[in-house]
Length: 182
View 1: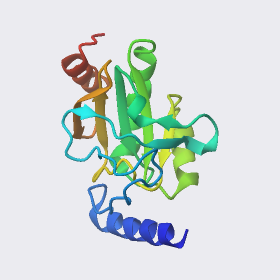
View 2: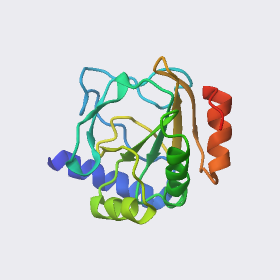
View 3: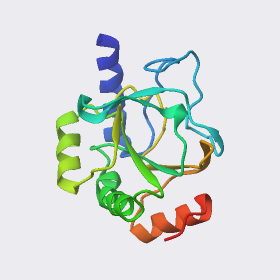
View 4: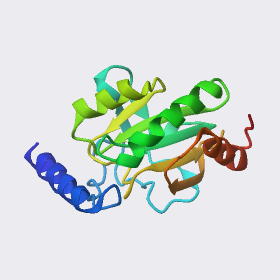
Protein backbone atom coordinates (compact mmCIF):
# COMPACT_ATOMS: atom_id res chain seq x y z
CA UNK A 1 0.00 0.00 0.00
CA UNK A 2 2.82 2.40 0.85
CA UNK A 3 4.52 1.61 -2.46
CA UNK A 4 1.30 2.49 -4.32
CA UNK A 5 1.06 5.80 -2.48
CA UNK A 6 4.69 6.63 -3.29
CA UNK A 7 4.16 5.73 -6.96
CA UNK A 8 0.96 7.76 -7.05
CA UNK A 9 2.68 10.76 -5.46
CA UNK A 10 5.61 10.47 -7.86
CA UNK A 11 3.26 10.23 -10.81
CA UNK A 12 1.19 13.18 -9.60
CA UNK A 13 4.33 15.28 -9.12
CA UNK A 14 5.54 14.44 -12.59
CA UNK A 15 2.15 15.26 -14.05
CA UNK A 16 2.06 18.61 -12.35
CA UNK A 17 5.36 19.40 -14.04
CA UNK A 18 4.44 18.04 -17.47
CA UNK A 19 0.69 18.61 -17.81
CA UNK A 20 -1.13 15.63 -19.26
CA UNK A 21 1.87 14.25 -21.14
CA UNK A 22 3.87 11.33 -19.82
CA UNK A 23 5.83 11.17 -16.66
CA UNK A 24 4.02 8.22 -15.12
CA UNK A 25 6.02 5.16 -14.23
CA UNK A 26 4.66 1.95 -15.73
CA UNK A 27 3.05 -0.33 -13.20
CA UNK A 28 4.92 -3.49 -12.33
CA UNK A 29 4.09 -6.39 -14.63
CA UNK A 30 0.98 -8.21 -13.58
CA UNK A 31 -0.29 -5.49 -11.24
CA UNK A 32 -4.06 -5.68 -11.24
CA UNK A 33 -3.98 -8.08 -14.15
CA UNK A 34 -5.14 -11.59 -14.81
CA UNK A 35 -1.70 -12.88 -15.80
CA UNK A 36 2.07 -12.31 -15.70
CA UNK A 37 3.92 -9.91 -18.03
CA UNK A 38 1.35 -7.90 -19.90
CA UNK A 39 1.59 -6.02 -23.16
CA UNK A 40 0.79 -2.37 -22.81
CA UNK A 41 -1.18 0.05 -24.95
CA UNK A 42 1.98 2.12 -25.31
CA UNK A 43 3.45 2.07 -28.80
CA UNK A 44 0.91 -0.47 -29.97
CA UNK A 45 -0.65 0.41 -33.32
CA UNK A 46 -2.38 -2.92 -33.81
CA UNK A 47 -2.92 -6.20 -32.03
CA UNK A 48 -4.89 -7.23 -28.98
CA UNK A 49 -5.56 -5.18 -25.90
CA UNK A 50 -3.57 -6.04 -22.78
CA UNK A 51 -5.13 -8.82 -20.72
CA UNK A 52 -5.76 -6.78 -17.59
CA UNK A 53 -8.69 -6.52 -15.25
CA UNK A 54 -10.09 -3.10 -14.38
CA UNK A 55 -12.59 -2.38 -11.64
CA UNK A 56 -15.78 -0.50 -12.39
CA UNK A 57 -15.48 3.24 -11.78
CA UNK A 58 -16.71 4.09 -8.30
CA UNK A 59 -16.55 0.46 -7.23
CA UNK A 60 -20.06 -0.46 -8.37
CA UNK A 61 -20.56 -2.87 -11.21
CA UNK A 62 -18.68 -5.74 -12.73
CA UNK A 63 -14.95 -5.50 -13.50
CA UNK A 64 -13.77 -5.39 -17.09
CA UNK A 65 -11.37 -7.86 -18.69
CA UNK A 66 -9.82 -5.43 -21.15
CA UNK A 67 -8.34 -8.19 -23.29
CA UNK A 68 -11.80 -9.69 -23.87
CA UNK A 69 -13.28 -6.55 -25.46
CA UNK A 70 -14.75 -7.03 -28.91
CA UNK A 71 -15.78 -3.99 -30.91
CA UNK A 72 -16.50 -1.87 -32.47
CA UNK A 73 -15.41 0.02 -29.37
CA UNK A 74 -14.00 3.46 -28.68
CA UNK A 75 -11.78 3.48 -25.59
CA UNK A 76 -11.19 6.85 -23.98
CA UNK A 77 -8.36 7.09 -21.45
CA UNK A 78 -8.86 10.16 -19.27
CA UNK A 79 -8.29 11.59 -15.79
CA UNK A 80 -9.73 14.42 -13.75
CA UNK A 81 -6.32 16.15 -13.60
CA UNK A 82 -6.06 16.29 -17.41
CA UNK A 83 -7.52 19.57 -18.72
CA UNK A 84 -8.01 18.37 -22.34
CA UNK A 85 -9.71 15.22 -21.02
CA UNK A 86 -12.19 17.37 -19.11
CA UNK A 87 -13.05 19.26 -22.29
CA UNK A 88 -13.57 16.17 -24.47
CA UNK A 89 -15.77 14.02 -22.20
CA UNK A 90 -19.02 15.63 -23.45
CA UNK A 91 -18.07 14.75 -27.05
CA UNK A 92 -17.57 11.12 -26.11
CA UNK A 93 -20.94 11.17 -24.31
CA UNK A 94 -22.73 12.68 -27.31
CA UNK A 95 -21.06 10.13 -29.62
CA UNK A 96 -22.05 7.31 -27.26
CA UNK A 97 -25.69 8.36 -27.42
CA UNK A 98 -25.71 8.87 -31.19
CA UNK A 99 -24.03 5.50 -31.90
CA UNK A 100 -25.79 3.48 -29.19
CA UNK A 101 -26.08 -0.13 -30.32
CA UNK A 102 -23.56 0.32 -33.16
CA UNK A 103 -20.33 1.43 -31.44
CA UNK A 104 -19.66 1.10 -27.72
CA UNK A 105 -17.76 3.74 -25.78
CA UNK A 106 -15.75 2.74 -22.71
CA UNK A 107 -13.91 5.19 -20.48
CA UNK A 108 -10.83 4.37 -18.41
CA UNK A 109 -9.96 6.75 -15.58
CA UNK A 110 -6.16 6.46 -15.79
CA UNK A 111 -3.91 6.86 -12.73
CA UNK A 112 -6.37 9.19 -11.08
CA UNK A 113 -5.91 9.48 -7.33
CA UNK A 114 -8.49 12.27 -7.13
CA UNK A 115 -11.50 9.96 -7.09
CA UNK A 116 -13.88 12.61 -5.72
CA UNK A 117 -12.88 15.03 -8.49
CA UNK A 118 -13.22 12.28 -11.10
CA UNK A 119 -16.71 11.40 -9.85
CA UNK A 120 -17.70 15.09 -9.85
CA UNK A 121 -16.39 15.44 -13.41
CA UNK A 122 -18.42 12.43 -14.57
CA UNK A 123 -21.55 13.92 -13.01
CA UNK A 124 -20.82 17.42 -14.36
CA UNK A 125 -20.31 16.17 -17.93
CA UNK A 126 -23.25 13.75 -17.84
CA UNK A 127 -21.19 10.72 -18.84
CA UNK A 128 -23.31 7.56 -18.80
CA UNK A 129 -21.22 5.14 -20.86
CA UNK A 130 -19.34 2.43 -18.92
CA UNK A 131 -16.37 3.68 -16.92
CA UNK A 132 -13.54 1.74 -15.31
CA UNK A 133 -10.64 2.70 -13.06
CA UNK A 134 -6.95 2.13 -13.68
CA UNK A 135 -5.40 3.78 -10.60
CA UNK A 136 -2.21 1.72 -10.87
CA UNK A 137 -1.63 2.41 -14.57
CA UNK A 138 -1.78 -1.23 -15.68
CA UNK A 139 -2.75 -0.11 -19.19
CA UNK A 140 0.57 1.75 -19.25
CA UNK A 141 -0.44 4.78 -21.28
CA UNK A 142 2.23 7.46 -21.21
CA UNK A 143 0.15 10.55 -21.93
CA UNK A 144 -3.45 11.70 -21.96
CA UNK A 145 -5.89 12.14 -23.54
CA UNK A 146 -5.73 8.90 -25.51
CA UNK A 147 -8.19 7.24 -27.88
CA UNK A 148 -8.05 3.56 -28.82
CA UNK A 149 -10.32 2.00 -31.46
CA UNK A 150 -11.02 -1.74 -31.29
CA UNK A 151 -12.62 -3.74 -34.12
CA UNK A 152 -15.11 -6.62 -33.95
CA UNK A 153 -12.29 -9.17 -33.60
CA UNK A 154 -10.90 -7.37 -30.54
CA UNK A 155 -7.92 -5.95 -32.43
CA UNK A 156 -6.59 -2.44 -31.84
CA UNK A 157 -6.88 -0.75 -35.23
CA UNK A 158 -6.02 2.81 -34.19
CA UNK A 159 -4.76 4.71 -31.20
CA UNK A 160 -3.41 8.17 -30.67
CA UNK A 161 -2.80 10.83 -28.08
CA UNK A 162 -5.22 13.45 -29.28
CA UNK A 163 -7.75 15.83 -27.82
CA UNK A 164 -11.16 15.22 -29.31
CA UNK A 165 -12.62 18.62 -30.16
CA UNK A 166 -15.96 17.61 -31.69
CA UNK A 167 -18.35 14.72 -32.20
CA UNK A 168 -17.56 15.00 -35.91
CA UNK A 169 -13.89 14.30 -35.21
CA UNK A 170 -14.88 11.10 -33.38
CA UNK A 171 -17.27 10.13 -36.18
CA UNK A 172 -14.53 10.63 -38.76
CA UNK A 173 -12.05 8.46 -36.83
CA UNK A 174 -14.64 5.70 -36.33
CA UNK A 175 -15.68 5.79 -39.99
CA UNK A 176 -12.07 5.64 -41.18
CA UNK A 177 -10.79 2.97 -38.82
CA UNK A 178 -13.86 0.92 -37.85
CA UNK A 179 -15.97 1.40 -40.98
CA UNK A 180 -19.04 2.57 -39.03
CA UNK A 181 -20.70 5.66 -40.46
CA UNK A 182 -23.38 7.98 -39.12
